[in-house]
Length: 109
Image 1 (cartoon, rainbow, N blue to C red):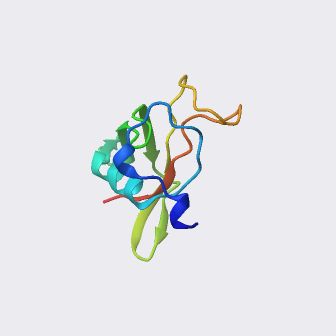
Image 2: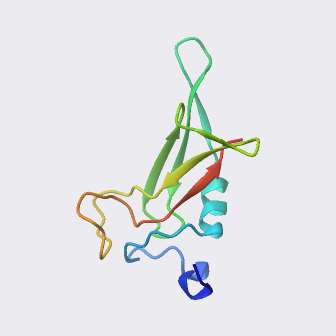
Image 3: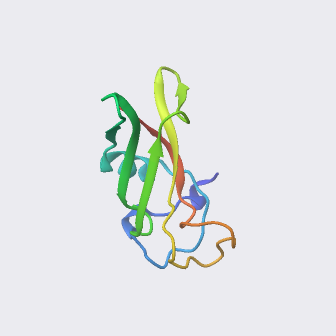
């Protein structure tokens, strides 16, 4: 990735953003700021974590869950989060996909 491949986050959110698969640090930071919420299971223990809010890049609603799919990276638990806004067109998006293409590994506290 070169500096010209990185979007200017001051232009975010942009509802008309085209499909773009990029892992940008500012996107990850803003997604992390949405805050994970612990969802408890039937015995009162955390069953999964849920993150929900507007995608920093396109502004549409996105939701991520983390449970058994979390990955340990250098003593930090992270989940790969992708914008999964649905029903909103993003030019160039593959037919079988959702979202604007933004994604990244987001730590779970």
